[in-house]
Length: 78
Image 1 (tube, rainbow, N blue to C red):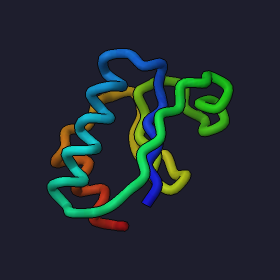
Image 2: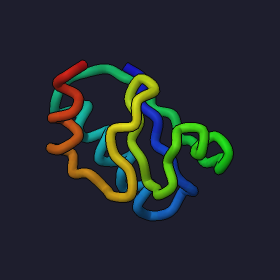
Image 3: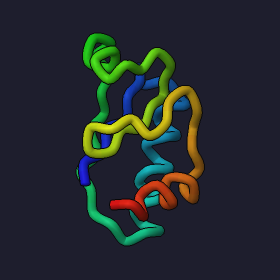
Image 4: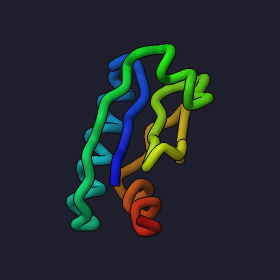
C-alpha cells in the first residue's frame, strides 16, 4: 500500500501523517508514506483543500484531519 499525504506542511498536514502512522500500527499493515508539498502535484490529484489522504493513487479524504480510527477503517479495504 502506498500512502500520500498532500499539503504544505501545516500543522493539520503533520497531524494527518501522524494519524496515518498510528492507523498502520492499529491495523498491522505495511505502507510507504510520501509527503507531497508541491502545489502542482497536489492539483494533479484534483485536491483544492488540504490536508488530503491518498491511498494507491486514490483520494480518500481532503480538507480535514481524519482520526487514526477513521484511517484504520479505510485501510481495511487494502
